[in-house]
Amino acid sequence: MIDELGWVSGALALLSLLLVCTLAGRRVTLARAERRRLGAEERLRPLALALVDGGSVPLPPLTAHDSRALAVVLARYARQVNGAALAYIGDFFEGHGHVARELSRLEDRRAWRRASAAHALGGMASERAIPVLLKALADPDRDVAAAAARSLGRLRALEAVEPLVYALVDGRLPRAVSAQGLLSIGPEAVPRLRDLLAEAPAQVAAFAVDLIGLLGDATNAPELTVLLRDTSAEVRAHAARALGRLGAEEAADELRRALDDRIPFVRVNAAHALGAIGDVSAAPALARQARMDGFDPAEAAARALVRVSPQVLEAVAAEPGNWPHLDQAVDLARIQA
Amino acid sequence: MTDNGQPLILIADDDPDILALVSFRLQKAGYEIVQARNGEEAVQAALERRPDLAILDVMMPRVDGYEATRRLRQHEETKRMPVILLTARVQEDDIARGFDAGADDYVKKPFSPQELGSRVQAVLGRR
Image 1 (cartoon, one colour):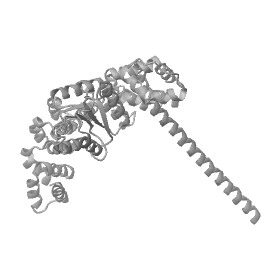
Image 2 (cartoon, chains in turn red, yellow):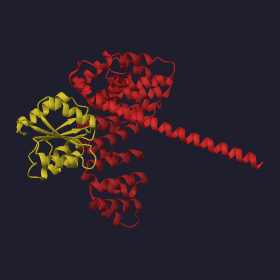
Image 3 (tube, one colour):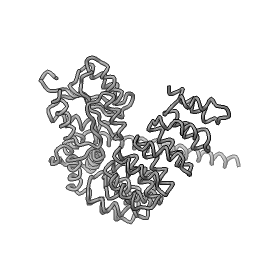
Image 4 (tube, chains in turn orange, cyan):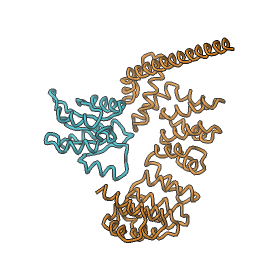
C-alpha cells in the first residue's frame, strides 16, 4: 500500500513539473510573439504614416506577419483620423483585398470566424462593409452581433443609429456594446436620434434622449425641454437628465416645474439637472424637496443644493428632525469649499 | 523659431500613434518638432526649447492638457505661446474649460491631419 502511494505521489510530482514547464514555455513563446509584433509595428509605422498621409505609396514585399502588423497599425489610425486620411486607409484595405477577405469570412459557418471578421472590418474604413455589418447585427451568435455593433460605431455608420438604439432597448446586445457603438458614431448621430423622438416607442425615445444629452449641444435644449411634459415618465426623466448634462440654463423654469412631477425618479433627475445647471433660483424648491420628499428625491435635492446654494443647505440641515442625507450633503459641501 | 528659420512646434500626447502622426504631418509641412508624452514633460520642454506653438492632448497622464496650458500661461517665457488642444471630449463645457485655461484653439478627435496642419498655419499666421 505504501509502495503504491509512493508511485502515485511520484507520478503527480512529475505531472506537476511537466505542467509548470509547459506553462513557462507557453509564457516565453507568447512574450516572444508579442515582442515580434511590437517590433514589426514599430518598423512599419513610417510606412503606415506615409499611407495615412498620402495614399498611394509603393508597398515593399511584406511577409504575412508584417502585412498583419501593418493592418493593425492602420486600423488603429482609422479610429483616430477622419477626412482624406481615413479615405486613404479605406483605399489601402480595399486595394489590398483585406476588405473582400473579411467580408467572405463573415459568411463562415463558424461563429468565432464571423466574429473575428466583424471585428476586423471596424478598422478598415470601408463603406462597403456597412450593409453587411448591419445584417450581422441580427446574427444568431451574440459575439458576432456585438462585434458588428462595435465596428459600425468605429465606421461611424449613421445607418446604424436606429438599429443600435433598438438593440440597446431590447437587450439583444450587451448594453455597454450598443451604447459604445452609438457614442463612437459621435455628434453626427444626433439628427437620427431626433427622428426617433417623434416616431419611436417611449422606451426607445428615452434612450435617444439620453444619447442626445451625451452627444448633443445647447441647440438641442429646446426640443428636450418640451419632453419634460411628455406623457411617458421615462421620457420625462431622461429629458431632465439630458438637460442637466447639456447645462441648459434656458430649461431651468421647466426643470423647477418637474420637481413637482408625480413620479419620484423624474423629481430625482430634475433635481440633479438643476444642480448641474447651478440654478440659484431653484434653491427654495430644492430645500423643500430635500426636507419633505421621499428618500431618493430628497437626497438628489440635497446633492443639488451642494452646488446651487451651500448656505441654503446649511440652513435646512440646521432645522430639527432632519434626515442624515442632509448632514452628508453639508459635509460634502464643506469638503468642496 | 529654430536656427534654420523653421517654426518649432511642441506636440504632447501619451498615445505614440498620435504623436507620430502629428509629428509626421507637421514635419512634412516644414516645421521642427519637439515631442512630450505627458503634460509635465510638455511644460518642461516648452520652458527649455521655447516653441512657437504647442499642440496638447487633453487626456494625458500626470498633468492633463488643461493644467499644462494653465501652467504655460503662468510663465513669462510661454504665456503668449499659442496652444491648440487636441481633444476627444466635445461637450460644450469641455471646450469652454479649454479656452478658460488659455487655449487658442481646439481640434476634436477623430481629426484630419491635413486640417490640423491648416489650423497650425492659421494660428501661427495670427501672431
